[in-house]
Image (cartoon, rainbow, N blue to C red; front, side, top):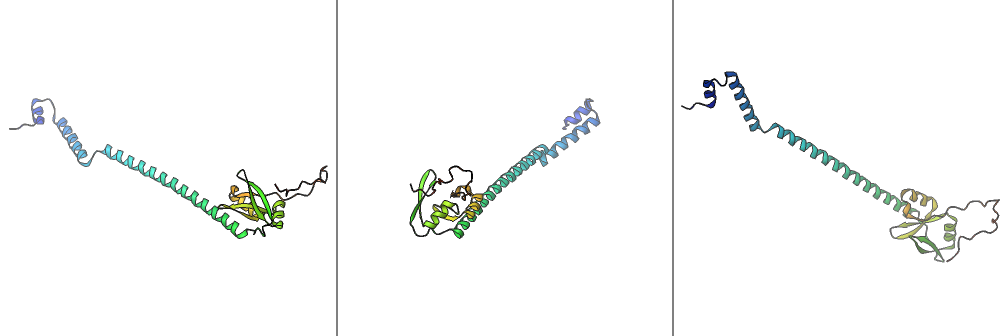
Amino acid sequence: MSNSLRDQLLKAGLVNEKQVKQASKEARKQQKQNRHGNAAAKDQDKRAALEAKAAKIERDRLLNQERAKEAERKALAAQIKQLIEENRVPPGEDDIAHRFAHDNKVKTLYVSKEVHQDLVDGKLAIVTLESRYEIVPSAVAEKIRLRDESRVVLLNPPEQAEDVDDEYAEYKIPDDLMW
């Protein structure tokens, strides 16, 4: 003789049949949601998954940008190395010490008289390749400067025609002073 609470409330007249049906319908709905999982929790999980996916896509994009920059840097270094190796000028017989400043230090490179004069005149330039100095034509040094300015150590501008109105034109300053 078990009377459910619903039956007891109906007998007592505290609720009508419509309210009982509504309550049982709500109870079934609640059980179904509990069985299949909470919809709000599912939405929250979906949002969290979408946010994690968006964060991963952003990290991957940044990583790809870094890799692309690194590949570009390596390609520029390879281009510079190839330019220097293909266009290097042999220093000739080691007759004259050509001194130049690099990293606030005076460096010495022994070259022939012709190479020394071309360096002074701006026809040749000194560039770095790894840890050594190489002599290349000034046109090649300009190409290297466009790619990496720190590689060009010495590039004298070519001498301009002497100014006619210059009062001191007859007193030419020698560029090849030995220190």
